[in-house]
Length: 194
Image 1 (cartoon, helix red, strand yellow):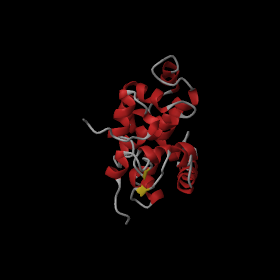
Image 2 (image 1 turned 180 degrees about the horizontal axis):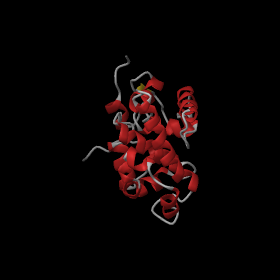
Image 3 (image 1 turned 120 degrees about the vertical axis):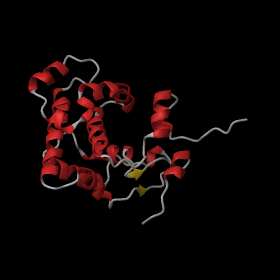
Image 4 (image 1 turned 90 degrees about the vertical axis):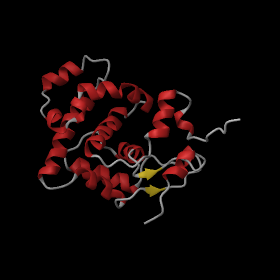
């Protein structure tokens, strides 16, 4: 008889959601393009369920040039107008404009000699924070670290980067391990404290 793996309850039984939970969520991510994509998808998710965005992710990658910073930074208002007619994305003008604004903000960071990935990871000291949450009810919506990240990014011109969005981003990008302690991924992603 096969052993049943314990998982975080939030992923349910949808195969796409389970695969995302098992293979991606909470895995430390340091590649700048992937971090840029994730930050924007977390912003798109605001007010919606993550599974909605996960189902649209491949389409987002197509229409936003695989989240290539230089290409997205050149998107025009006319191009966003066309996206407003596309059912494959969340058709809220502010969220779509934010992707372009955020690409320009990342490029401005780079022009100032700041590494985007290192900057984001600096809010938790550069290493994944290991939490020991017993249930999803124990997981906060925001933390002092996500507050600091949000404030910093907003001051740098980023959009749709409130503290709750930043904390969801930190969880997904593996900056914090918020798999519940009964989840098999919590143990796999645990690292010794540094």
